[in-house]
Length: 118
Image 1: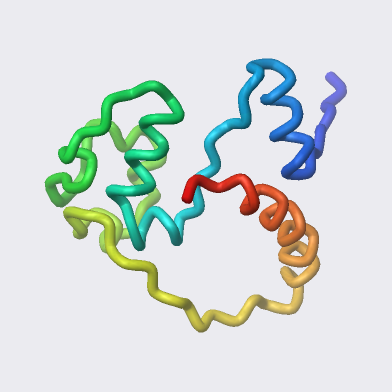
Image 2 (image 1 turned 60 degrees about the vertical axis):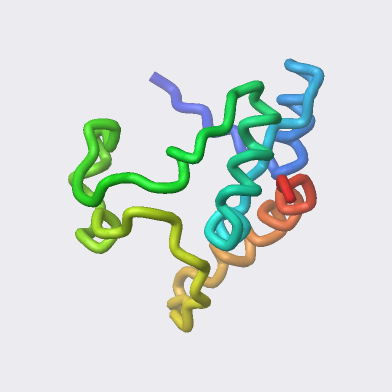
């Protein structure tokens, strides 16, 4: 079987969704969500036609039934928080062999970023 990989830039994705639905899809930036979860979740809910609930802002620690099959791959520190934690800048250095991936992805991120909920 032949495999096809279709790569979209950020705007191609936005344009395709807009073409299919007539709307720009909601784009959430993780930093914005971490720094102001109530505002961003309220905007997301509004854009999706879903009622916002304060219950979205906190949860019990530990594994959740809704974690799905990926939950076992999460690090324990992801299971410890009971709310959104403020964004913390990372000082990680991207390994040289991955710099080309960052360079390829950054323009797509920037394209999507302009449409983020804010």
